Length: 349
Ligand SMILES: [Zn+2]
Ligand SMILES: [Zn+2]
Image 1 (cartoon, rainbow, N blue to C red):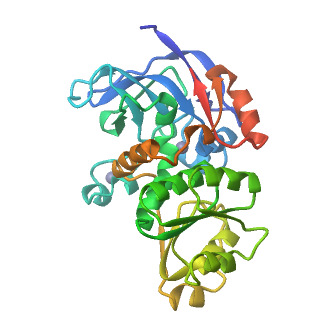
Image 2: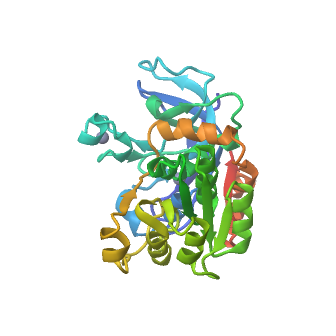
């Protein structure tokens, strides 16, 4: 093995952007960790926040840090306490590293651990040739899952988690927002037995892709009265469940009105500012609507479920990948993202 490696680092005194290095030290693992030779990693919205060094990043992250967390690779070394992983295992990584000690970890909810550490944020991550992580945050990949598909478990997992929370089997479902996570939620809803999936977005091209990923009906929310159309499509009742990927106030209010009484709104998208529910009395309280949030992925239910979705007839990997770049050309990948090219950008070290 070489002594040094390449990687993308958020530097201490660089207000924006990342710096590509070719002389980083290869991480040294402790007894509970594994060393991974990274095959490829996808760019996440979180990485963009870190690059811009916004308020969220300044609060949480200590530079310098090697970023990147949506990854696939092969284990090349294991710590001496590690018995359930071995050299040669192909893995992806759960970016939420739970403490194992808090109330939530001890009660089966490690994904909302109150002391959670973040791979590629609070500790070095996967935009590099090698990355290390605690072994129990790795997910073993089956041979028929490609490296690029493996990079999708972490980001798309939020959409899968939303579908799990919506309990879609036998139900009618509205998915608001048809970016990669919304598309994944659509295909997962169909895979897990939703009888009708209605997808909405503001952009017609995205709705065309939603059809390819399993949506039974698509509606452009900018061009129709969404609650009225949804009622027409559901025999006047409204949908059993709505999954919001947008985090946008108009979409959330509209989704509440699309739900039947005693339906459930699952919030996956993150509002970036305070939002108002316009008529909580009628939309939520009187109609006994349930409102729930999901955070990241359930460890490991969501991962197992996504593996099933990938093998199912609806999910199409090529529809959620936006481009492929050598890691040193990450600026070109960023330019694509900023010019509005949809889909995940994959970096190869
Ligand atoms: Zn991510
Ligand atoms: Zn914990």
